Image (cartoon, rainbow, N blue to C red):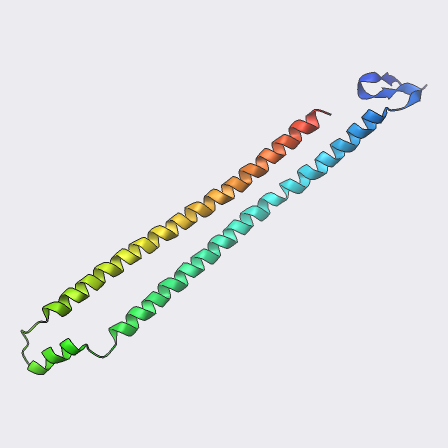
Length: 153
């Protein structure tokens, strides 16, 4: 018994398939291959952004440690001239107001810098997360377009 007639699928019995149905099969196979290739990119995108986040975290940690080194170096320096003058007077009650103000101002500046550094780190993490999500959304959009296009064949 011969082949059946299925004109909707492009099969015309003993006449075989039409060129259009052959092209449709080929296009479906290509779309399936592209879909599979794109799906494999998802873990790579996530891995890339997690590695970038780790690098940024290491950079921030190194910067924090270098700031700590600077602080420790300045803390163990020889006393400033005003402090040595106070020490030479041998008066326990003498204080250097300018030196105290300078220390207070430096402490406030360091606190502001630390706060800004923390805010910048948070903003960097948020921006990195947004970029990753944007790329994943773009990937999803592309996959949806391919599924819609496959459905047309």
